[in-house]
Length: 466
Image 1 (cartoon, rainbow, N blue to C red):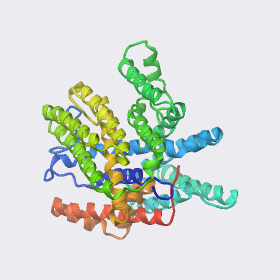
Image 2 (cartoon, helix red, strand yellow):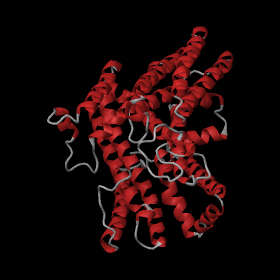
Image 3 (cartoon, one colour):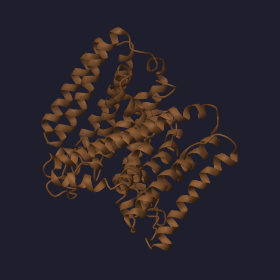
Image 4 (tube, rainbow, N blue to C red):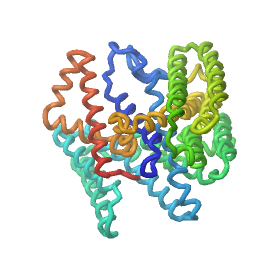
């Protein structure tokens, strides 16, 4: 913990954001192994194949981000709820949902590759949009006129850009065209928060919501059923809401349980490792990392029997470790491992459905497995941010996680346009054409600049908040 922030959550979120950007900039080529891409979109043809089961590291980044989002609900809202600030909470949730939907639509429309003007105009539009996001999403101090006036100015600039490209250049603005990742996050931020508020005092009720959704999921295809009516009730609002998005509550709500556990065990979460705990906790961190890697590898190569045997073996290893380590941080880690292990066990029971685990179309095995792995991987994140708090790489990832909206769009709306305007983009494209491995140089430069710029905005406290 630092300045009342949970650095492990920031680290988890930062890794997820870097993973998202990395997955987008890695060259698509048969020269690289298939595990570098989504399991359902990989070599040799990179055509989406929903029949291809398995997961890769790429398929973990989005659910890990969702899990971190869920963990943040109690950390952000518990104090307000205890103080009875219900109006403040309601207005905050509505504001956040609306701003994220706005963000999703603008990201899709004003992204340079989606505009039809000349490259120079498109790049300048993207940079202007990026700058306007600072006005829209930053919380400015001072008078009401200054705070809200700057936000209105940001909206106005973006509105002018949309009008220019839509009405003058003829690139029709369609509100239903959006960035699906951000749109899902908007729905999860709103509905996930509501579910947490309803179940703030009961894990059992929270799990009940997940079970109820499972019932709706499996019964909504029955014609005339109330579940089918509920499922299909969005004739004119699909552009910002779809009931199927709620499937990600199966990741977000377990994440919120982690957030509540962090508050309940605050005395352990905030204390430093003792000298004896450093070596012992390094062992459990390595075991937890191995647990995550093992599941990704065995499910990717479809070694199901080995996966099931390994699940049992890891359960035995966890049992032995916590049998002899029962105090201090180990007592808290035991709770997290138990949640993670149970969720992965449940996930493996669902694994055979539809031919095996998949990210897209995602299934209960995918949602529960990634939730369970996130519980376990949190221990790795907690260990790293405690032991390597002064490490520049670790803290750079943490700062990325503290300003995720900047990290998510800086590549498309600032770095690429800047390279385009300075004529460096053709050079990078030429490198990629020479060799796929030269294309990795471009990817590395993009990742470095994304991390550097996001870290700078975090250092300057230029936080984007929805």
